[in-house]
Amino acid sequence: MNPYVLFALRVMIALIWLYNGLWLKVILLDAEHLAVVQGLEQTWLSPENLLRLIGSCEILLAIGVLSGLFNRFVSIFQFVILLAMNTIGIVFSGAIAAPLGLLVQNLPLFFCIGLVAYYGPGFPFQKVNR
Image (cartoon, rainbow, N blue to C red):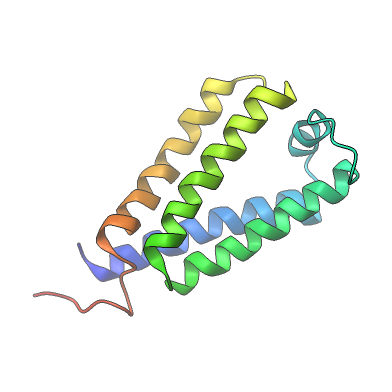
């Protein structure tokens, strides 16, 4: 696969994590995301601070994806985290109105992560084969 396409996929994946983490969870404290966290009924952290903590972890994940380092590990980690976040949100919070829709919306992200995991990080780590 073309290394520049793989690089573009990495950038898109990182932007998704960055948007969800920085904008929706850290800066905006999006009401939908906050409702999911409030439904978890944990007591060790306020829902707002838990949402910010999750968002901060997503920002770190975006940086890891963008770096291209430890590509396969980061890709597998993303699969596990994304699946866990969706499962926990659906099963434990009760705040997700369309659980199947959530999974379907994440299918393109799963697919892009899988491509990067399988073919490698792309540019600048791989040469273009002509």
